[in-house]
Amino acid sequence: MKKVFLSLAITLGVFAAASAQTPVATGPAITVDKDVHDYGDVPFAGDGTCEFKVTNTGNEPLIMSKCKGSCGCTVPKCDPNPILPGESSVITVKYDTKRPGPINKSVTINSNATNEPVKVVRIKGNVGPDPNAAPSGAPEKAPAGAPAGGN
Image (cartoon, helix red, strand yellow):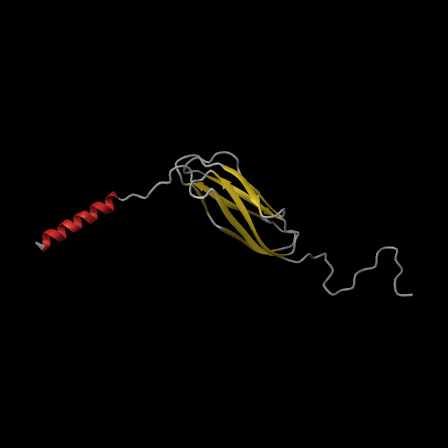
């Protein structure tokens, strides 16, 4: 009797595992290759361009209607053409590296995706100092034409 129940349990388990399928997203679905791009240390006025690869993992065309940076120093460029199921596109983000200091910005992607209609990705890193800037604590130069020295 135990063998019959064990055989039945094994058969049902195998049948259940065989019939289970990975659910496919109904409609367009967005998947991004990374949530954060880390520039690391970038020299002042260095290359501030990075890319995010977007894939449509759904079963209908994905349309990215708007890509917006969190400030004017972060400029994303999205392809407005539909991304067919299983296909990919690239979002190019350009950060203004003429702003020394830490980078911690976001890019918001608006689309018709059923899984995440608003997807936020981030960029981070650090821009080095401006080599032409006066060292901190150094006296400022007098304007041209101003007398040098005191009285």
